Image (cartoon, rainbow, N blue to C red; front, side):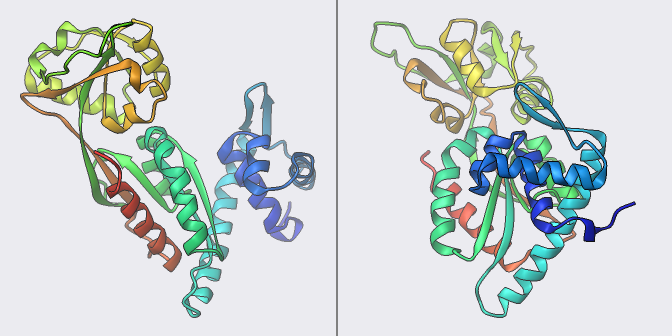
Length: 306
């Protein structure tokens, strides 16, 4: 048996960062400590608990069953301590503590840098953690308390989730631009013509895939799914290589360094729209820090270029 007295909060914080990022090297950068020192702290925790917490592999680390159980406990303990600090800090009108925000990869590439810049200037006494994941995973993390705030695409209504729509984006057909030629005009494409294009789409757990299939069913058409690839950057690479077409939002295209190689045609008749929403737990009172972070996120999202 062990108790919290056997561990310290710093070890739990280090452990949670490594688990969330799936890498000791990435966690060391975020925590601003040397990787060997981080590894020693985690090994010390494993020794104290007499449990292996991570499985090491060539791509990083993954939690063992014991690690998954400790992760849930650690997140709860760290959140309780953060809330205590925030409540005390609120009496000084200075938000303090730690807030964790979940972002979809496509929007994360546009928001992470400006979010950290503003956070550092406006909330110097607080700490920010950013994790990336699919919208379905972010919803789960919010409802289970793993993260405090999430940006999610097209979430389904849930009793435990409070949703605020922030941004509507039209879906477009994304194709490879002709090489060596000026980009052709990109007139809108009626949905009824979409079956003529072999598509590269994410797997069904992806919010964009669910939205696209729902709109196709409502329009009475059957999509030609050529390839299923979960990574949007990989989908764009395949489009540029001529393996098919994609259906993405403007932010998904803008986040790619290869946007200049693509032709984008907005879908119409009907015009499917993806909605980016702010999601928080409906069962937990937001702390002053969380409220400030939500305002920052809202301002940044609504300031994104159309």
